[in-house]
Length: 470
Ligand SMILES: [Zn+2]
Picture (cartoon, protein in one colour):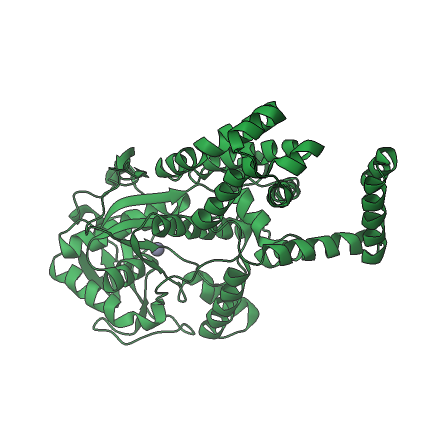
């Protein structure tokens, strides 16, 4: 019996054994982008975390149905469209296209379904009708409000107390300050749909409840999103879905920490400290960004700084280097025997490799701790690279590193950390770097050939000198 997969549940505020509702199958819904602007590094963290998570669940043998929505109707979209003099729906469409391009460039798997608000209006209206029937919602002058005091469990996710909640804006027609809009009566110049309450558009929170339920059913296994969505968005989703269906909404709530700027600020457009994914990917391969995110446990706040990506890129280079080193080693003696005669570094490689699979998977099984899992990877990488510095090891170390190579394959399978086009990425990075330094590829290749010659002449001083220049 394998050890259980443990997941931190925001709802119980504790680590739990993960048991899906239906054996072998997992339904997961992740709140997607509100498409009014470019995708930035903060959004990308959430996308990468859940991408790696879904890959891991599948790797572990579960059949995963992964749904991530687009919010294509929203106050922010309308505001932005007005600023730009563009049609809101056209603006949303443009940023959906752009997001898809970013997602592909980030190497994200496609969700099984990507519902949009604009094509889910019927489901949204049906849910609102049910909420009115069950006296969890009321209509007032063309708008429909959720009655927060009508749902006794309100606050169970976020710990907010209904009595202490005040509305951000004074809106006439609301019975309680904490009540929130399910349907907003049309205003001039806004997109709208007919409804039993008059023309209008859905509020933000009802969308996710409706899309999640139509795609995955009344009770899902995992609901994910950024920590900033716990309140009010996810609290409201629970109130709506459980109020209407009288069944638990999501069994596990999973939230990724925020990307923070210096001084602990959250990254966000309103703070003017945004780094677009497009711009980042002009400078760095997607793998470096992915490694940077996954080196930190998903629930931690992650500081964003200028050194972060070069460091991650450097680590990736050492990982690829270790693979190359491992692949280039020869020899046919039994591993334990070679390791013994090669000494401490070889023994370390053997030791880390043997324990690797169990430890790596155990880290991921404990609340998907990619940080600890990657620490195991880089411990092995360092040991392989150190071993590669010994001339004798290059000739005879093959059997010792054979295990390590299998470990690197496991990393590749489990996290999709290394895609098929890794070599292309590295070539691309090299070209860009060389270009930036004003050096031609021929020049470099000439130096590499000179160094190989010096080594075969056993002229170590010259070989080292060329290596340093390289
Ligand atoms: Zn949502």
